[in-house]
Amino acid sequence: MESKQTQLDPQPAGLTTATGTIKAQLDLLLLGLESLSGESSEAVLAAAKALDLEDQIGDRVALWRLRNANPLRRSSGGRKRVDIEEARALVMVIAHLAAQQQARIRSTLEQLEAAVEQELSPFRQPLVGDYLDEFLSHYRSRMVDGDVRDENSLAELALRILIELMFYSSPRGAQRLWKALLSRPAMELPAGSDLEEGEVAHSSGSDALPSS
Image 1: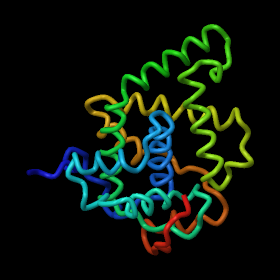
Image 2: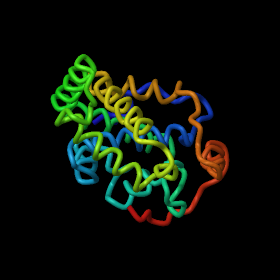
Image 3: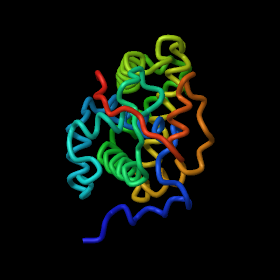
């Protein structure tokens, strides 16, 4: 069977590991999916198995290490290189899970649109409010700067992630996500995270397990 990673365009020449920006964005999209459904590692591992991606995402430990490579994460012990094939695997999994949750994503966005039209707080809409509460709670507990960003800033981030997930839930969602990642401007990362960006060409970090 032909590898499903071949559905994605090749990476740019010389890019062998994911940048800090790519790692952060992949983890945030997974956080958005988790906040929508309440499902976490088991859903990701099931998707990886269905897509024949177990070489890249074979078990819970491998997934924890990949997600904790996000330089926005509070834990500093588990950051590591994420090679391009691992990043491509996460792209396929995210698109797969987004497609599975497309109906819920759409319903949540419809409630958001209604809230905007009625000039109501999105937190007052059941689906949107539940999603925002979950996203903000997870973000504040896991990310380096989660305790200094205000609620409006985090809510804007959560809603942007939700809109992106709708975009990536389409039949060509994986291809769209892959292209977006490769063209995305570098994010502003926390102080001390230069190593993660520098991993593109050189070094690797610790493989210690994250605490969450």
